[in-house]
Figure (cartoon, helix red, strand yellow):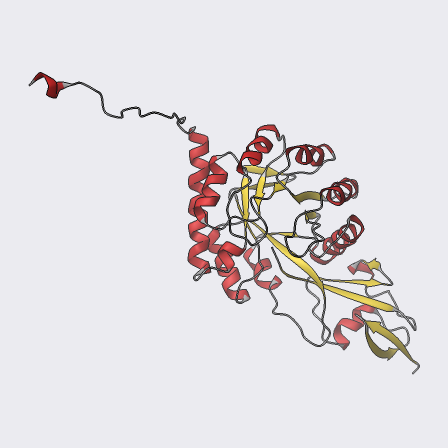
Amino acid sequence: MLTIGDKQFQSRLFTGTGKFSNSLVMAQAIKESGSQLATMALKRVDVHNQDDDILKPLVMSGVNLLPNTSGAKNSKDAIFAAHLAREALGTNWLKLEIHPDPKYLMPDPIETLAAAEQLVKDGFIVLPYCHADPVLCKRLEEVGCHAVMPLGAPIGSNKGVVSQDFLEIIIDQAKVPVVVDAGIGAPSHAARAMEMGADAVLVNTAIAASMNPVAMAKAFKLAVESGRLAFESGLAGQVSHAVASSPLTSFLDEI
Amino acid sequence: MKSIQITINDQVKHVADKTSLAHIIELFSLPELGCVFAINNEIIPRSKWHETRLNSGNSISLFQAIAGG
């Protein structure tokens, strides 16, 4: 069982709600994924064009909501967005993300750390999206973040856990849960992150933009469970030469 | 009744003087679930929507939870 802040999670797969073709598919996919935590964003309402209502099906499904601060370009924006989200959704849980550059959406470490420190003081359960930087992750932990969410690869890139070597250091050092966020493009990537000892993964694009999001959500569910079980079972070590799996009895030599 | 000019997300609107924030939701068929108001960049808690009366020139921002990763 995974514990973050005041909540326990049976599922180690967190999901995003963006990029689905409609709210029905989104709700079905999240249900099939078994996820108990789903991210949301905030935007200014277009007074003339209302969006598809995605909140109702999510609230009905009972999934916990994790509002993000997407769109924030600095700590000031993020802190304002966090307070808006807390009021709008009635939760003090927050995915803190600050990425000023739209091309690569790399998280700004300096602004993120500053915002995290303030938001923890303001009573938020802060889960910061950050680079796979072991030093930064420790600093975020020290200011009171309840988990860290280092990236596997750029947001929406589906490249997998290209930051693997650094994620391993983060996982080794962390005293708070490590959630690998961003870049996970296939169930095998999610399984790999879980085998490494990540506490959870957050997946959005890989499910939402697949041909069959509902079935893909299930594939990720199974992969995350499989990867976690493998981690808990202790993977056999690697060596650079062959080690026979059958006993070398040499009985044919004796004929 | 006296009418005042306000802006909602930069759209100019005319409403009756001292209209409440809660009434704005009904007036313009805005979504209530997952919404939050700020007046002149100050967040107004939901519990104060009924008692918060608008004055001429108020700049209202209304934000809504949407899909996102």
